[in-house]
Figure 1 (tube, rainbow, N blue to C red):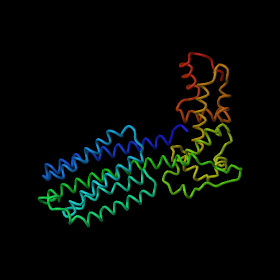
Figure 2 (cartoon, one colour):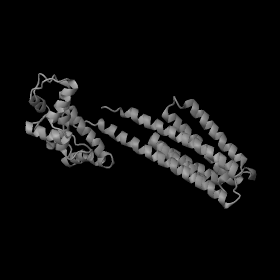
Figure 3 (cartoon, rainbow, N blue to C red):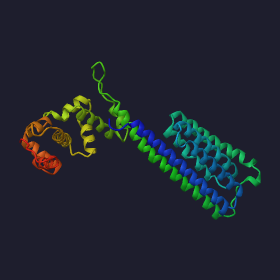
Figure 4 (cartoon, helix red, strand yellow):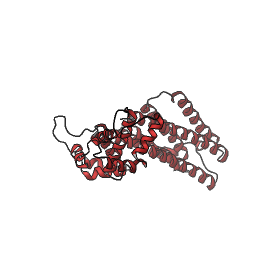
Length: 334
């Protein structure tokens, strides 16, 4: 398998964490300026800027060497605590700041086990209820109030837009990570049991995933290309169906979705690629073109010539001539 899916999944998760941290830092910095210059609230501006400095310094120390789960827990907990104190002082003016808590369960869903999704969701609900119950006990000079409707609108729109952006980023990366996880899972699937008895793949379960045809084609490639079934001139999709124990309809759709017209187009593409590989690797002074195309799975020269021209847009002879020019003018036995 050319791609290490574990490494790629880890890379995407680390990239998402970086994106989230830098977006949060930008938000905190801008929000500090809004609080100080537009809302004229020095206390809250200092509080927001303090968390900006704490998060930035922590990230500066950890960004090159950290465990994904550990830093996710750190971000979720610290973010929740920060928003809790904001809600305490903002509750009577606006509850839009609750939106800062919305991305947190989504982050838990992407990075952690399912149980943490429920735990953090419960934790966030607890924070909102606690803020609602305790907000009246906050001294008046600690409460953030807005001088007019315009200030309230500016603050709420800023919070809304920033959180919509963070949520969209999380969903974007989640989609890419989930696709890789599904393909990785399918790569580990081995048709049939070790004792030789038959086992039908769980097509119903796979069909619930949008990526089913992507991962199915990965397995088709593994069977046909790695096991060289394309070299058999009589190989058909029915034989492939028997080997993989998957219905022809699923196989055909997976092949079409992957950019091929049909099964014949895909397997002929494999054969042409193999012909080109043999031409590059063989001592072409000692082999014949007939040996090359029959070894790749073509039953006769006319079929080979027609298919090669359709796929490569040049004839086999033209391709060989180009190869001659690259390797020096040597004779090739047709």
